[in-house]
Image (cartoon, rainbow, N blue to C red; front, side, top):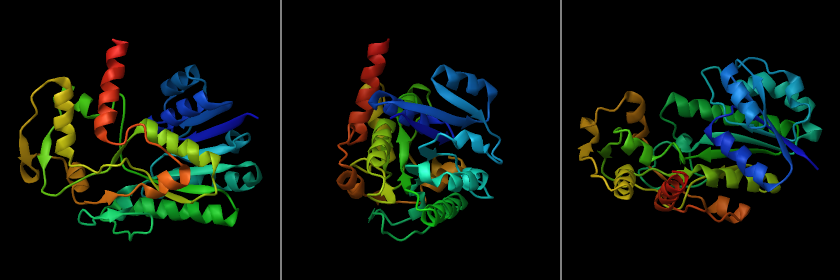
Length: 292
């Protein structure tokens, strides 16, 4: 039986999910983009492209969808995919086997470096995080109203080929910013894709997952390891107050927590390919060496 994944937002993570599923079994794919140029690229990858401005989605796009992935971020009006397609999704609830909404672990806010899990309190400090919480609530309510298998995934920092500390170091943009006790959780994009694919096989296991690797780590350690792999000198440690970060970048340092992936691993039976940033960065570099 051929299944069809429709992606609201065909970005970095959605592309990885499509590639993962393509290697598994019989799937067809469709996704939204704002760019006609990108639409042509999507078609070359075997993805039916739907040019979408964030308004009402054409219900016909969802006619054959068995799975829906929402990675488009919310704006100040809410999640555009929800407001543009909730009626169409509700009308097709009998044929939809899985809906994944990609949120962020930023909804937990600051926990002073302590571990958080799916039952932890939410202390959002930014408008971005508050918008995510509202979007999660909208999708969860739709799932409950129409008995849809709606799963929220709270993602950490995402890295992978073309988007890692290796690239920042090569571009001369890497900084070793020091804030005492600060850690971030992260996850290789291929492990994220594997987690989503595993959820599709058991969509009723849980309706909320934290996604993260096994080792929350200080960001400066990640940059230092990338420099070691590239055999270049690491940039000097700079206190947060002197790093010259944008207000957006500074806001991420306001939250300090360690994200538990215990539910993800137990419920989905997921064995991470890249349990820490060390395995992930080393694998990216090794793949690049093979291609060159």
